[in-house]
Length: 616
Image 1 (spheres, rainbow, N blue to C red):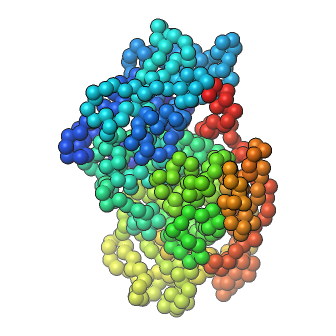
Image 2 (cartoon, one colour; image 1 turned 180 degrees about the vertical axis):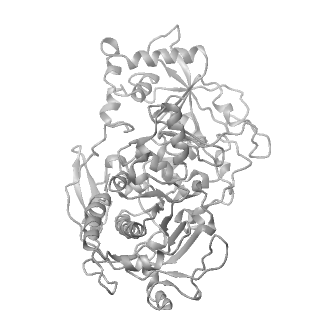
Image 3 (tube, rainbow, N blue to C red; image 1 turned 180 degrees about the horizontal axis):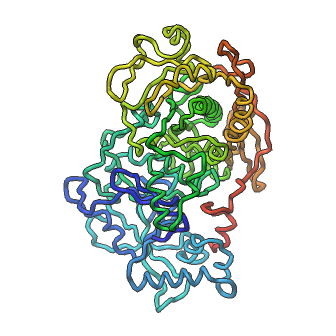
C-alpha cells in the first residue's frame, strides 16, 4: 500500500476502533471462503487475479462498478491513495516507470514534468496519450462466470516507453464498494444496500452484528433505510478520506472518519507513536482533550430537532436544504451553549442533507437530483452527511468547543443505561408545567414522556429542561445528573441566554461569529442555466456567477445564527431573538468565491487544465 505522510488507519473486522493517521482507514477483511449465494460461486478476487498492480479509484457508483467492473472503472480517475504491487516482472517495470516520470523535468517527458502529483502522473502514464480512456480490457475467454464476474483488469501503458523490455502491464481497479473513496464511505451508506448487488466484489463475514448506540440516542442515523435483504451490511476493506470541505488537513479527515464510527482517538495515538516515536500533538489540542473514562457528554436528537421546521424532508431540494442547514446550525449553537454551561463534551450527531455538495461548485448537481454527479443511483439524499457541509469542524476546535462525533461514543463503551434523556427545547413547551415550571425532575413520568434508566437500571423520573432555558436553569435542571450522557430531545430553542453578560459576549464572538460561520454552497448550471433549474424564491437566497464564459453558477450561504443574549431573572432572554418555526431569516449578501481557497491543496480533484496537461 502506498500512502502519503498521514494516510493509513487499520481496524478489526467488526470493532472498527484502531486508528493511526487520516487518509485511508482499513476497516475489515474479506473472507476468502465466503459463500454469499449458497451455491459456491467464484471468489470475488477471480476478476482481478491477473493484475500486476491494483489501484483504488474516485468513481462514485459502487453499484455500477460491481456490475461493469473495469469497463466502468476506466472512465474515471484512479486514486493512488491505495496502490498494491505484486512481485512480478511487469509490476517492477511499472514502479521503475512511475518513478522515472515523477522525476521528469524536461525533454521528451515534458507532459509529465507539468504535472504536480504522483496521482496525476499515474493517470497520465497508464493511458495512451491523446486517447480517452486509452485503456483496453483484459478479457480471457472461457472464464466461468464472466458475465457475473466482469473483469477488473485493464491493459495499461508505461507512458509510451519500454522499461526492462516491458511496455504495458495489467492494471486491476479495486472495487468501489470495498475500497471506498470518501464520498462513498461518508455519504452513500453502502452497508445498507442489498449485499447481493456486491457478491462479485465482496465475501461476507459471519460476525458483523454490533450494538448501535445511535438508536439509543435517537440519532437520525438509526432511522435511515435498512435493506431487509442485507441486515448485516457490507463491510468495506478500506475507506480513503480523499478531500474534505474543511481544508483536507489531518484533523479534518480524522473528524470525517469519526462521524461514521471509523475512528478511535486512543488507538490513533498509539499508531502515531509507533510510526513516528512522537506524541500525536495534532490530536491533543485543548479542545480535543478527552480522558474518555471520566468524561461526561451532552448530545441531542438531530432529527427531532428539525421536525417542527416547515420543510419537506423527503425530497432533494436546494432551497429546502439551505433553510434546513440554517436551522441545524442554530440548533448546534444552542447545544454548544448547554454543553459549555455544564462543562460537558458535546457529542455532535451528523446533520441531515437535502442536497449534496460538489467540490468548489464544479459540475451541475441539479441534473442528478441534488446528488454529486455519478452517485445518484445510491439515493443517499435525503440523508445524513458530514458536518463540514455546513460549518468548519476544525474552526470549532480552534474556538475551544470541546466535542466528539456522536458515533465515537460507541468506542468509549457507553451503554444504554448510561444515558439520561431530557425533554428540552420546543418539546418543553407545556411539558415542563408538569415539573412545576421549575425545570428539573418531576415526581413521575407523565403519559407519553420518556422514562430514563440509570446505570443501576432502576426507573427514574422524567427530566425536563424549560423552553429557552437560561444558563442558571440549565445548571439547576441538569447539573445534578451524573450519567455519562445527557441526551436532549430537542435542541431547537433549547437555550435562552447566559446569566453573565461577559459570558454571552465571549460566546457570540468566538462561537457564533467564528466557529459557526456558515460554509458556502455552489453548483454550476450548464447547459440549461440556473434560472431554468432553480425556483425564483431560492434564487433570491444566493448569487449567480458567470463561469468559463459559457454558463452560470449558483452560490448561496447558510444563514448566520443569531447571537445568544443575557437572560433575565425570569429565565427569558433580553437580547436574543429566536427564529420561530418556519420563519425565514434575512441573510447577508456576500460575494461568493467560485473556487475554494485550497483547491490546489492535498486531496484536491483535478481541474480541466490538469486533464489537458496530462495529454487526455
